Image (cartoon, rainbow, N blue to C red; front, top):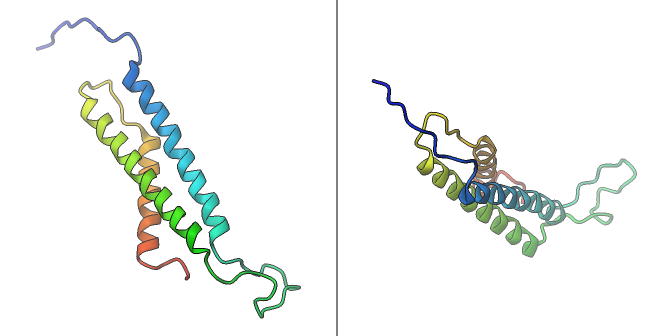
Length: 123
């Protein structure tokens, strides 16, 4: 039984626009966490001209930046999962769609956190 319903949506409302902003903030936080990770991790001797005694590069994590890295990942994970949940709870029609960028970001951040807590990053 098909019902003829009038389409009342006139385009994206404020909450849909907020999803876009939340997505941009989450991706920005993720990129920021990658930058913090780059500066927090131990340096690696890439060249044959560097000595192996550790004098030319840092061989330890910077703890303050490591904590900032993890906090940024947790904040990004929380924002992303909240955005996915609100999008899922609002999607009621067949024409509504899942925002793949939020799902992809959630999968990446959860995988990185699992790697971190399973001690797969070298300490």
